[in-house]
Length: 282
Image (cartoon, rainbow, N blue to C red; front, side):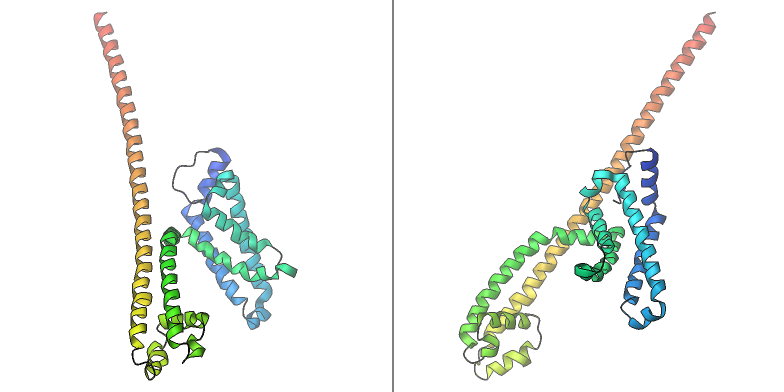
């Protein structure tokens, strides 16, 4: 949890919280993540592991120990609140995977150790905004994907009926037509590899493929980009509003303190006047 709001607890929990959210500590964790990423890449080289494998594994274990200690501190500081934060759960999961013995039926988890590199997403604010925007755009992307799937299905049925007899290897079945249309959507040799050869037997084949490409490749792709951009703007606006709210709360707190001090000063001045009047009458 890398929040900017004041931590409500004092004592040891407050001091530990101030420590783990300190910019230098966060920068150190980020540096360890980058070093760990380099080490995981070096472990893929048999020659490097043969020369310095023990050192690499020792450094990797030391870095993992630091990650475990950090997670343990955050668990102690935030208690149940830790499990209500998606980013904290993500950090916990990627570190926990590295602790599972990579032997026997769990040997596949050894390859998943590289997921620790993804912790950089939880530390760098700009990356967190991008991931948050992508997650926020999922409903819109699913809707666009459903529309695209319908278009694909309709076009695949049409292509199978039109070209399946002459080109059974590409459009002989619905499944082959779907795959061929996906290949065409990527613009991978759609003209020289598909449309032009087919135009020798079907002169108006272009009238089917060009509209399909315009709709599937350009229009739908722009819709995907538009949804993601809109989600990014929504996240940025929400963060801007949160910043303004924090500034307003700070200003209100300062104004309240100033008003309290002014009232105290007025009381002291009133008491001083009364004291001077009493002495003057005596």
